Length: 234
Image (tube, rainbow, N blue to C red; front, side, top):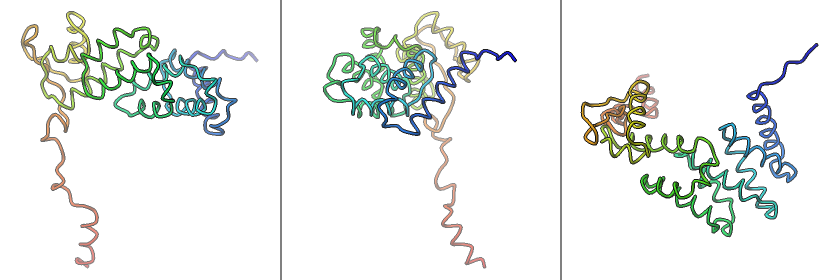
């Protein structure tokens, strides 16, 4: 009976399962280090992500410093940046020796992380443009950071001026027009009438940019209060 060939997606899932199994069974076995390094490259090419596997690899590098690959570490940190607002970057950085952090490419990534954490998106994009050889080695980087920037803006603004949005996501002109049209059609954005820099974009309401939606603690009765009432009613 002829066996059907596995698709690339099935092969990737098999690799993922195998590595995650290795990590779960014996995370401190140095023999799995090459598998974990290959898995980082697989995450890059397939645009997937496994924080647990990457942290496991960084821990093994601590025990086997002579086997550390700076290229692999840089890719792990870029993937961690792409996972923001999750604290993955800090978790990974904690496992990287200070002497390694002082190397230029890692100093750059730490600066980029600081800009993102503080919402300084213009400075972030300017710095990233100087370090394309680092960040563009990982597909999907720009889109991931744009999503993070929109997340931050949506926590702050109910309405946002076009230039502020353009600066945060590093898109301008016709590309920005197409981006806004897509968001209006798929994400509930409202484009108020206006032209050029004077245009306002209404972002979907949430409990952060629209406090009225936040559920007040006064509107709910704690469970412990209810349990105290039962004996009284009895």
